[in-house]
Amino acid sequence: MNRTRHDGPLIVGGGLAGLSAALEAARAGAKVLVVTPEPLLNACSSAWAQGGMAAALTAADSAELHAKDTEAAGAGLVKPDATRALTAAGRETVEWLAALGAPFDRDAEGGFVVSLEAAHSVARVARVGGDGAGRAILSAVVAAVRAEKLIEVWDDARLKGLAQDEDGRVVGAVVARGDRLVEITATAVVLATGGAGGLFAATTTPAALKGEGLALAARAGAEILDPEFVQFHPTAIDVGLDPAPLATEALRGEGARLIDGAGQFLLGAEDDADLKPRDVVARAVHAARSDGRGAYLDARTAIGEAFPHEFPAVFAACMRSGLDPRVSPIPVMAACHYHMGGIAADADGRTTVAGLYAVGECAATGVHGANRLASNSLLEAATFGRRAGAAVAGETGGGRPLPVVVSPDLPEAAMADLRTAMTAHAGVVRDANGLLNLIALIDQLESRHGATASLLAARLIAQAALDRRESRGGHYRADYPQTDTAAEHTRIRLAQPATLEAAE
Ligand code: SIN
Image (cartoon, rainbow, N blue to C red; front, top):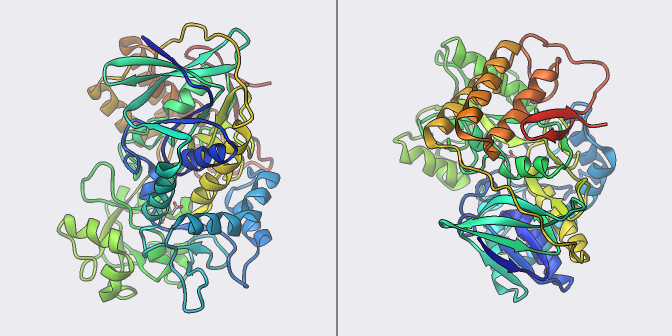
């Protein structure tokens, strides 16, 4: 193992959250090392976001109204303080990104063009190039990172373990660069490792994201919050691709309709029927497919000839698969899209373990609760990413690292089995039998291949889904369809490898 000392924070992940943290930490004078497994802009969910960034940007809107919508979507589990901190910073964050060069769509007066998405009471999603928000915003941030002399990027380094001193403080990480392991000690570590969509066979996120950050933080003793809450997007385009391309919800905001194979509306004929909360729409799509009716997004009338100009990314994805959405309805399925649960963290990214921060999708700051409001995640990534960067810049480090347990990899065939079982049993509709089968498979794979980080992440999700005997937000139990009166969080601390125990 090679060893290197970095005199500043180490940021693991090169999406919007990690790079926002890097820029802010550098602005505060810290030397920053960013490690990512792929070149910047590749394999991170933020680059794939289509809809845009939710923020109160118009006279019809306010930070308070945005917070209320966020709380309503989160089904009783949204933390009000974190949410108000997020929505109050909406305009400032959008303007910070615009100043970095993010080319938000503007109206004739120079205001931000905003669109409507499900469960928002007003149009508030700032768009870029129609449906190209994520890539355009991240490109501006990447350019700023490249111009910043205090930031160094290793774009070939995959996280394999976290280093702790004898007090349990996180003091660095082990990464794999090709077949070489490198231990990096640092003043603190910020995990910005994204979600866990790659654990599911049907996903709209990069398949490389398999919850490793979540698992390694859990192993380091960090509290894990609500891992059972996974959001399934109702309109992943079903053309046999892995990951599945997304047909943004903004299409439904513009009037595209969900229909079955016989042309009947899936959720009713009212104009706003398809803009119900995402979990409701995802279950309707799932049910239509399960009972053989099929599910399609019909944009022929509402968008028609404007499709290539208004939604170029979705149009290109359809056309690559030989499907012209101007003349044919788009076949859709529900697919894993976002992990609301994650490493418990405050708005500055602080976790329950000293020296360890978490930002973006791997973190659970309480702003998404049981069901994320669409397009809130880019706002959270940039806003809380910046806050974490400012906070971590003040860290001074800890003691000598103890030997690090390096996580083995799960062989490809085993991963394929796991992904299939996760979609079948921890997907849109769950029940005890399915979840027990899934946990039995995880046990079996673990005894065969060792305690890999991806298996631990899958176990955290499956066990918490089994233990939550109600339906709430993105978590739906066919055997417990009711929503309990009291909304309770799941808090988990790992007692020893491979066993889970509720936190005090
Ligand atoms: C979408 O554009 O439909 C996805 C937006 C989001 O998940 O925030």
